[in-house]
Length: 305
Image (spheres, rainbow, N blue to C red):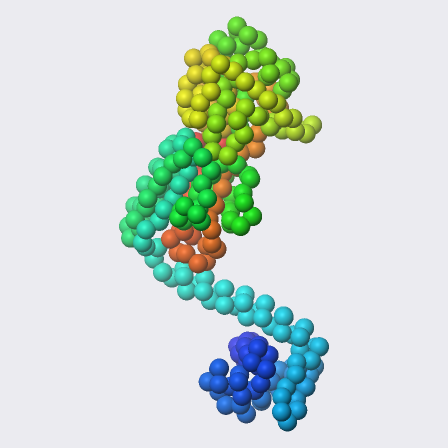
């Protein structure tokens, strides 16, 4: 028996199990009841089990049939997904695509990549928005949220686009005046430039090293909801900042900032977050795969990974 015939027979079997009769299945499938009965017989012979107990009035699925039904349904679901995805991939991405991200990363990294995406797929109409808060893509009607941070609601689907982490930095002038902290707890005695950015808890820095994680409650005279403002203050010698490696790396290389407590960092990977499977939308899949390729090939600043 070839695989195509097996798949067709599994579909007949599942339909009979759902309908509870050969005649009902035959009507649903557009076949004769005799043909349905024949295919069930062929399948039973191939499997070596009896799937249904037959009487003159009705059929009853057997225990073996119950087990076979669950497996057959899983196989058919996987096959349908494969066919749907292959069909969707043949379609050119088109229509409106709503994408959002955070202020700094969105402006510096995502926005240029979105512009290149639009050139690659001219049938797309892309609306890109940035926020200083966590976005619920389902409730707010976004197809895709490009976010930094690993805490993602279980009802959403996510793909990691880039490995990233945050590091502690300060200007040489600040360190010359105040000294450098030797431990994470020393940060409590320093001017820390606190950022309220999307879902990150205000004034709480969770730092990880090879020895484990430490949580420090920090404070300072200056705070903001914009990472680039905090970075500017750090450059002016106002305090210590916790920023993504991609953001701080060029300033470290020129010596305008110095990394402190280099054995400590805060994980902050970059994720594509979306409300439905990529196989259900050619435009979302195209965007996610494009961004993944851009970030993997150096389309973003150095991540230090």
